[in-house]
Structure formats: C-alpha cells, structure tokens
Length: 175
Image 1 (spheres, rainbow, N blue to C red):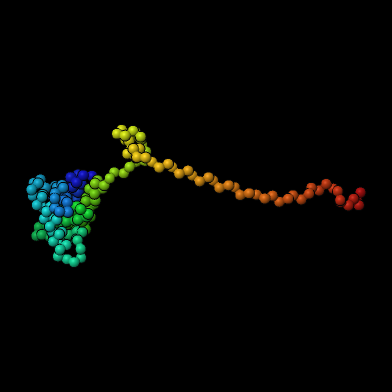
Image 2: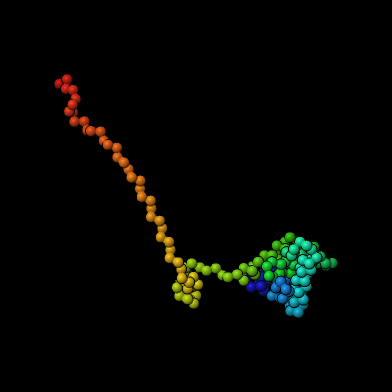
C-alpha cells in the first residue's frame, strides 16, 4: 500500500493519533496527514533528528522507537530500515497500542515497496502484457523433474506343494 493510504488507514483505526508523517531515515518527507507540507517536513526532520540524537547519546545503538511526553500530548517515533514514522497524540495515550499501530503502518508501506510475488499460472499465461498474465511465463522455467518410478513389488517365492494323495502306496488291508 502506498504511504499516503497507509497513513489514512492509520488515522481511521487509531483515534489517539492526531497527526503522522512517514519519512526517509534522513528526514525527507514521504507522506503526511498534516495539510501544511512545510510544517510536515519540519516534523519529519525533527523526528529523524530526535532519533539520531538519542542514538548519539547512548552507547546502546540506534533506537527503534521513542516517545517524548509533552505537556499536552506525546510525540512518537519508530524507525525501521530506511524509513521512519512519527506521530502526535493527545495526553495520556496508550503507549503500547500507539507503537503497535505505528509499526504496523510502517510495515504495510514496506510490503508495498517489496517486489510483488510472481504467480505460477493463471489467465493469460504465456502472453506478455495481457491482464492477469504472469511474469513467470516470460522467464524460462527449468524442466520439471520426473517423478521416481514406483518401487517394484517384492518377489514372492513359492513353497513347493506336497504331492497330491493318489492312493498309491497306502495300505489296502481293509479291503
């Protein structure tokens, strides 16, 4: 999903978030719920700077998430990979839920940036550019491995039958 749509969805599901931005790690604005683009850019750069300052201040590495509590609300920032998301909330937000929502939003944008999956088959297979076709048809596929033949049935050995009783060699004493 694109960043603007992800932020719109975030605002719908999280009543605690009043404004949010998605930015590059350097602070370059990607998308925002703030109408004033200049203000949104300043907020994105400030969030990136806050995360960088926290990293420089500690010997524990780059922070993944950060909350700054203000008098009338909080600022949240989450960094993952080469992007970050920052949000403003009102007073006393549910911290764990806000972080969860921000991380989910950022990951939904990361999924969009990843390469789409290639289908194995479908309508238009083998016809490049046809709707519903698969890019897999354009690539040479290795031949399918032939299945192993079924195992041969075990050989049976027959036990010799005893000779049939013909009456020969029996005692006819009773006759």
